[in-house]
Length: 82
Image (cartoon, rainbow, N blue to C red; front, side, top):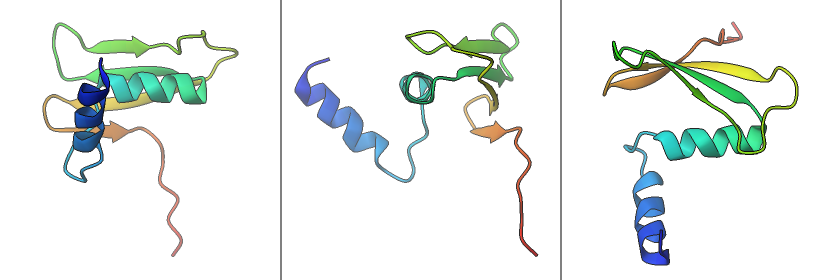
């Protein structure tokens, strides 16, 4: 990817209306040293695993749901102060 392509990509990604993609999932896996399990609504690809480039040290796993072409979901429980 050349600099112009990277700048265009980053320009799109910084918009509030732009969803993440495989590149952002890979960056998160690499940055946080986690294995990402992506559970999707695709019948042929319902479970994808994104590994950090340097491998996972320990059992760092997160699970993210993806409703095809709609949005991502977390399996984490939200802590709401009442």
